[in-house]
Every structure is written in structure tokens, then in C-alpha cells.
Image 1 (cartoon, rainbow, N blue to C red):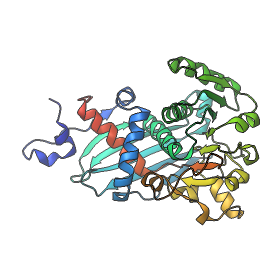
Image 2 (cartoon, rainbow, N blue to C red):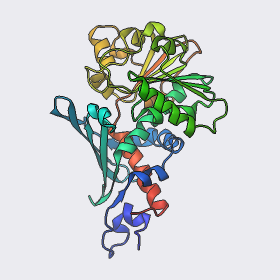
Image 3 (cartoon, rainbow, N blue to C red):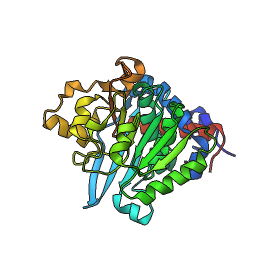
Image 4 (tube, one colour):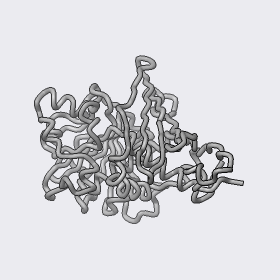
Length: 346
């Protein structure tokens, strides 16, 4: 007999019962339990009230080869409404694209914070794709123009379709999606897949690998998810009212936009780690293009209304995310508790 949700989350609820075994939530199960819309709503609701209760030391990053790395992202909650300890174990192998494999792969392990009992492990490769896209789209809700019609996606890797669908979910007025990738065939393949998957959205068109500069010039929302160390988005080409969503970089050597884009935009981050980890910001601060005090705020401050997002139709906004263990824990919570609620236990 499957354990009840109360027994899984709080084993002391049934003193005489043996602790239920931990469950494994597969990729297929995870996809059945989560949508971009549901995760965005969950983060919007939970981050303001629970982020302060989650302890998350800086990620451990280890170079496992000249071209690959291994990351550990632990977190734990002191809130009774979030009784979990969790850690995400991540491998980053950017050359996997040549093998048609994701560059980032991961697993998340969840424990009960009261007893230390292991509760679940789940595919965190898919979880990371969902949560990363959800964070970008949630920020876009506060920073992009409501009447945005053109979404430019720079990069056609595993994250790109998630970002596109997440942005579409919060900005339904988008009518055109343009995908650019260094390898045109990958952009073309992604567009063909999206046309099939999004054929129910009336009036939405897709195209691939137009001139990058022209695409940036026409973009209302420009989302970047690449491993680039050379700026792809030139700030001079950003039109008035554009929103730039920077996702790919997570080391000081990685950089998806130039200093001019940072200088022209009102800059927000997902969390304070972005200042130390994101090449766009690290470089801009070192070159004195901006001061750290000029970073307007973070995602939690946006949601709470402590910091004002978009102030006019003309201003340019920039959102830089590097990911956080807090968001990982909240996302894993949603998946795990949805699994128990739906009695989808392997």
C-alpha cells in the first residue's frame, strides 16, 4: 500500500509505522506532474514567504576535466511548511551537443528536515529546465512589456523550448518567435518541433536563423541560453522597451551580452550570486561600466513589490539568472507533493 502524503512528509505522524521507502520520480512522471504555468504560480506564491527560511550555501563547483564540471547545490528549510532538506547534483558537459545529449544533467535528492529520512530522488535535468524557464518567465511578468509581440531566442539547446513556452505562458500577445543558433540546422529543427507542439496557438509564427543583429533589433523579449564567452547581444541594437533575459552564463568567463547592453538597461538578478558568477556583471563591474549599487534588485524583491519592475514602455530591462538552491528546493517540493497528491508513486 502506498504511503500517505502525511506519512511521507512527516513520518512521526504514524509513530508505530515503519518509515516508507524513498520514491524515485522519473522523467516521464515529472512531466506529468508539472507545467510551466503551475510552477510559475508556485514560485510567485512561495518565494516571498519561504525564501528567507531556506539556507543555501554557495554551490560547490569542481572542474572534472578541462571542458566539464560537477556542481553540488545543497539547501534546507527551517519552515514547518517546507520540511525538507535537498541537494542537486549537476554535471556540466558542454560538448555533449555533438552527442545529441543535454549539456547539463542532474538528479535531486529530497530528505525530511525533521528526521533526516530520505523521501525521494527525481530527474533534476528536466526539473532544472522547468525551473530555469519559470524563473525567467516570472521575471518577465514584471519586466517585459505586456504588449510584447516578438520573442527572440538565442540558442537552440535543451533549455530553449522550455524558455520559449514559459515566456509564451506569461505574454500571450507574442505573435512571432525567432530562433537563432550558431548551428542553423539546430535552430531549424527546434522551430519545426515548436510548430507542431504549439499549433494550437492561433496567430503564432516561428522562424529561424535570420541575421542575429536584425533579430535583436526587432525583439521585444530577447532570451539567451548559450555557453558563449563572446557577447552575442550588442546593446546598441536593443530597441526602446526591450527586455533582455540572460540565462546561459554562470562563470566570470561566460558572457552573452556586451557592456553597452548592461549600461543601457535597468538590471535585475535572480539572486545575489549572479554578481559574483555571471560574466556579464563581473566584467561590467570590473570595467566600471556600472556599480554594484546600480543593480536594481532581485526576483523576490520584484514579486514583493519592494522594487519596481518596468516603469515605462521605453526603458530597457535586463534580467540575469544563475539559478539558486532555493528555487530548486521549492520546485522539488511541488513535484514531490504533487506526486503524493496524485498517488503517482513508483
